[in-house]
Structure formats: structure tokens, C-alpha cells
Image (cartoon, rainbow, N blue to C red):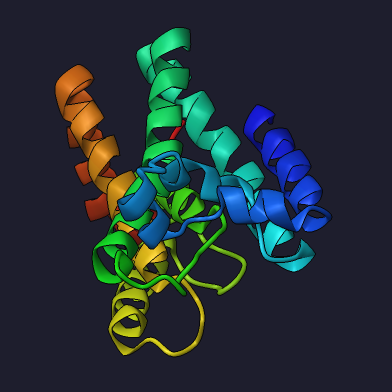
Length: 208
């Protein structure tokens, strides 16, 4: 909820303050030329418009609480919250890395939004509940995830629609991989449960 409220307040302020939005959004050329590395993180707290903001806040609220509470139950209060932040904020940063590599010499390129972070949270959820049904699109989480990765990869290569598909793709990969690494390092027994849930097919119940 703190992240939802912070993102909402900062984004709303930036709607009415273009200089603030320009200072916080991701501009690879500014990072390279002026060392403004903070933009890797701050761009996740500003959005293009209310629709963009609402979608990301809705996804963060819907899936974020589940992942945070699951991490707390598995790793304890302090580590659980810390790992949740690592997944979400790390996915914001990881999602921006490809854009930096591609556009660091392009002074006209900029990006904003929490889509990388929310993708990371969604894919952590898919790892927990591979056969849970999404309402939109109406698919099991696992099939949605495979389709999401394929589509994001395809559109990232194709481009031309003004959507940050690289952020979606690599934010999702970050959330999936980091969650697996955390399980491997701190709760390796959970990995066998995840495999069992995956192999159980669509009849598998959700975690916890």
C-alpha cells in the first residue's frame, strides 16, 4: 500500500508539473551524459496519464499484496518485505536496462511508468500459482505468462507502437528469476512444491 500511495501521489503531482516529470522519467542520454542514475528507479513513479497510472496501480495492488504476504510467511517479516521490494524495484530497474543499452545516445528517447515492476510482481505470482485463472484474458496464469513473454519479446524487436515492451519483458524475467533464486538460497524446499504444483496441472490449488 505504501508503494501504491507513493506512486499515486508522485504521478499525480507530475501530471501538473512537467518539469518534475521530465526530471524523474527515464532518459538514457541524460544517464550517460550527466550520470543521472536515479532515473533507473524514479521513472517507475511517474506515468503518462491517469489510465496508465490506474492500470499499474491496480496490478500492483491486486498481485503485490499476495506476493508480499507470501514472502513474509516464507522468509519472516523483515526479510519478506525486503525481498518484495527487491523483486518490485529491481524489476523497475531491470526493465530499463535494455532501453539504456539501445538508446543511450538518443537524446529524444524517454520512458516512464511502473510496468517493469508490476510485470515482475505478476510473474512472481505465476510462479506461486501457475494454474490460477486470470479474469482477463481468461487463461491459466502459466499460459498467460508464456504468451506475455512471447508477445513482449516479439513487440520489443518490432517496435513502433510507443509501448515499453522491453520493460515488460525484462521486468517479468527479473521477477521470475529473482524469486527462484530467493527460494533456492533461503527456502529450497519450496522449489519442490512449485514443481509439484506445476505438474499437477489445472486441478492444482493455489498456494497457501
